[in-house]
Length: 58
Picture 1: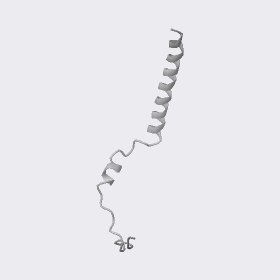
Picture 2 (picture 1 turned 90 degrees about the vertical axis):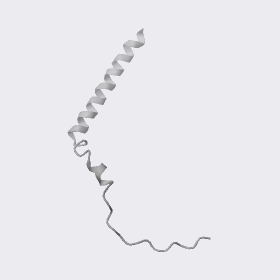
Picture 3 (picture 1 turned 90 degrees about the horizontal axis):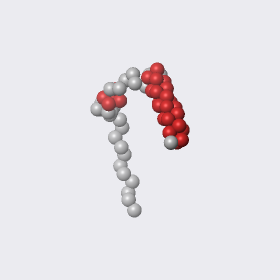
Picture 4 (picture 1 turned 30 degrees about the vertical axis):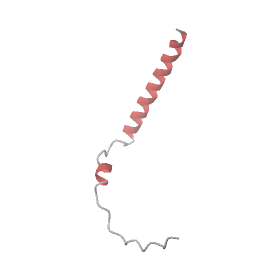
C-alpha cells in the first residue's frame, strides 16, 4: 500500500504537466488553423519544369 503514496503524486504531476503543455500549445497558436494543412494537400502544385530524360541503366 505504500506504493500508492508514490504513484498518486506521480500521476498528479504527470497530469499537471500535460495540462500545462496543452495550455502552452493553445496559447502559442498551435491550434489556430486546423483545416489549413488538410486543405493544402488537395491543392495542385504549380507546374514546373518537366523532368529530364532518365540516365541509361546499367
